[in-house]
Amino acid sequence: MISALFAFAFLSLCIYAALRDVETLTITNGLNALIAFLALPALIIVAPGWDIAGGHLLAGLVAFAVSALLFIFGAFGGGDAKMIPGVMLWLGPEAAMPFIMVMAVTGGGLAILVMAARRLVPVAATPGFARETLLPGNGVPYGVAIAAGAIACAPLSPLLQPLGAISGFPS
Image (cartoon, rainbow, N blue to C red; front, top):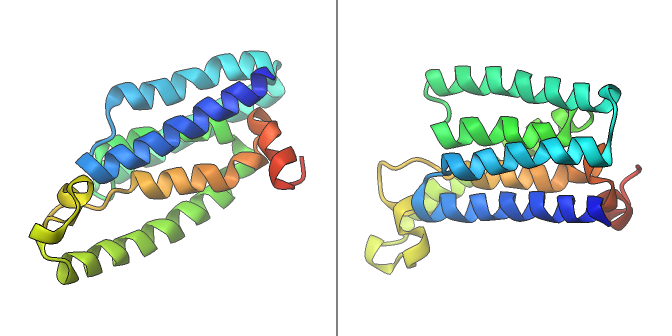
C-alpha cells in the first residue's frame, strides 16, 4: 500500500512538472527538490538496504553530473537539469538506459512539434496554457520528455513495483 502511494506521488509530481513546463517553461526548484527528497523515504521504506539504495543514489549522482554538464553547455535549462537526477533517484540503474532512450526520442519529437506549431499556429490563436511555449525564440518544455521517460520506465524500478504489476512489465 505504501509503495503504491509513493508511486502515485512520484508520477503525479512528474506530470505536474511537465504541465507547468508547458505553461511557464520552468520547473521550479521546490518541485524538483520534492521529487528528489521523496525518493529518500521511498528507498528507506520500500527498498531498505544498500544494495538497492546505493544503486539508486549512484544513478542520481551520475545523472546530476551529466545534467550539470549539459546545462553548462546550454543543452538543458536549469529546471530540466535538476529534474533528471531527481527522477533517476526513483528509477535507479535498472531503468537508466530505457529512460534516456524514451526521454531522447520524446524530446526530439516534442522539439519538432513545437517548431512546427510555432510556424503554423498564430500567437493570437494559441491556447493560454501553451502561449509561452509557442512564442518564437523560447525553449522547448523538456520536462514533458522527462516525465514521459519517467512514466514509461517507472515499472522497471524496484521502488515503483506496484506499477510493474499493473502494466505487465516484469518485476
